[in-house]
Each structure stands twice: as structure tokens, then as C-alpha cells.
Amino acid sequence: MQITRETDYAIRCMLYIAASESGSAVVGDISEAQSVPRTFAAKIMQKLQRAGLVKSKRGVKGGYFLTREPSEISLLDIIEAIEGPLSLNICVVDKNSCDRVSQCSVHPIWVELRDIFAESLKRYTLKDLINLNTP
Amino acid sequence: MQITRETDYAIRCMLYIAASESGSAVVGDISEAQSVPRTFAAKIMQKLQRAGLVKSKRGVKGGYFLTREPSEISLLDIIEAIEGPLSLNICVVDKNSCDRVSQCSVHPIWVELRDIFAESLKRYTLKDLINLNTP
DNA sequence: TTTTTTAGGATTATTTTTCTCCTATTTTCT
DNA sequence: AGAAAATAGGAGAAAAATAATCCTAAAAAA
Image (cartoon, rainbow over all chains, first blue to last red; front, side, top):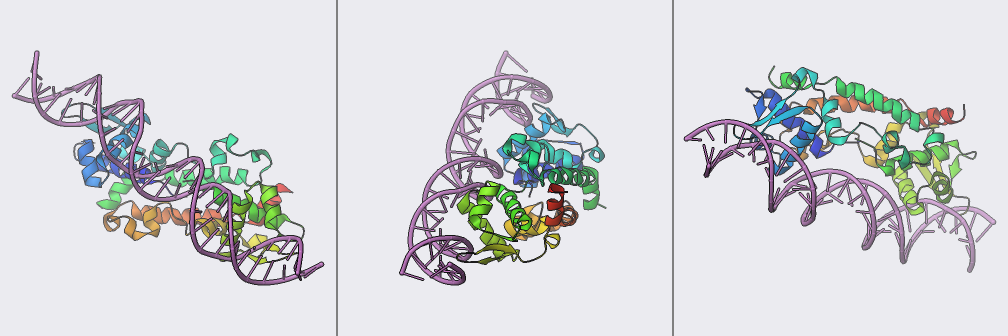
């Protein structure tokens, strides 16, 4: 029931970019500032890019920058970018994982809880997190 | 962000006991009915007992039975019995896991979300799940 | 005293997570 | 043009967590 360390890193990386003066940052800086292993940070940024949360620019003066305003990027966005669609139980996202889904009395609860959790995670944006830090 | 298979099994085991005529069940039956590997089911029942959700009786005519009414046992109870205290990020439950907790702007959010999620999970009891099944 | 059933320690197997390494490719600056 | 600074992505290694299994012991009932 926990986010993975990778997801935690991803949030911190996004936060670093969002809070940076220029609005963009290079993997080396992100990695160092947020204590995320450098090559792992690079992989994470690639995932975030594929999910459309950031864009990259190669070469000198390159780096990553957000594609939307910090107020438009939620924790849910980042979590799903890294972990895939949110669900509390595998059966919600992969019907084949359980052959009893159709008769399972818990299944609909997992679906319902997914929506409740998603709503909660949607409510927190990068902007909120930055504001908490520097009020 | 998902419960483990062990936790899913645990919920199904509890549900089986709660729904049984006699109010008690033997590991072999639980295992078979819920398609949980037998020895694993035994381990799970032991965890549930240590958490105080069930009690056991050894020997012929033995088995496991609930210590509280189905309406008094929530999904949160079962999840925490198996996985330990609920938290969305390791840092909420183990301060040593992250050396930046004190200055981390996300940390308080994880604490807050934990409470929201816990409340949601508390709302669903074994009784609710049984009723869904046999209305 | 035999059978049924749980208790618990030790151990193995599998899967997932958490990275690392290497070789492109792109872009800028001199 | 060429060197330097970045990201891109495939492949895979290491570590940790999950998902079991096995064995021996203990308790209770018949």
C-alpha cells in the first residue's frame, strides 16, 4: 500500500524543477539536490517525459522542463506516470489476475476505493507543495 | 500503491469465516474455498491471530473464529494486521528511512493522506462485504 | 493413543524494485 | 568542424520484498 521509492524520487524531481528559478533543470543537478542516484534519476525523467509531464532539450543548455503549470500537475499525475494506472488491488487493473472477479464481493469495493483515493491524490498539486515549503 | 496478494488472501480468509454457518473454519477449508495455497493460508491465519482479529482452537473440531462481529472488523483492520501500520510512503512510518523528513514539503501530505485513506478503509466492514454478496 | 488441527522456525523460489553500464544521438559553443 | 554537454534507450545486475514450502512440535478431541 505504499508508493515505491521510484515514485517518491519522481515527485522530488518534479518538485525541484517546479521550484527552480529558470523552470528547467539538468539531471545532474536534480539528482544531487534530491539525493537520487544519477542514472536512476535519468530513467525516471524519461518515464515522466513519456507520460507527458516534462519535455527535454538535449545538449549544452539542455535539461528538463514542465509541460504544464505546477498548479496543473497533481500527485496522481506523477504516481500514475511512474506506476501506471492507480489501483489498490491488481484485479482492478488486470482482470486476468483473478479468476473470481465476477463473483467476488470485494472487487467492487476496490473499484470504489480507487476512485476515492484518486480524487484525494488529484487534490495536491506541485504548486501546493512548493507553497508549503516557502510560505 | 497496491495491497499485496497476502493481504488480499487475508481478506478472503476472513470473509470466508465471517460468512460460514458455524462462524468458524479450518485452514484446509478456507484454503480450498478461497484458492489460497494451504501453507500460506496457515501463515496468514497466524498473523491475523497475533493481530487479535481471530482466535484458534487446536485439534479435532478446532479451527479459527472471529473475535469480533463482522460489522466490527474493517478492511483497515485486516490490511494493518498483515502489512503493519498503513502509510503511503515509508517516511510516514519510519523516520529513519529519509534524512530529509524535517525539511521535506511532501512529508506532511503523506501524513494527511494516510488519515484520509485510513478513514475510507475503516468504512468497509466484513458485514458490508457479506451483504454485497448475498443481498 | 491416534487423529486432527494449529504454531512457529527455517528455508526456498519468484517477482519486483532499484539501480548500473554502455552506446547512441542531439545540441550548443568555440 | 569539432569538442563538450546533455538526454535516449536497451540490457542487465544487485538487492529487497513477496509468496510461498517444509518440517517438527504442541494441543485437543475421539
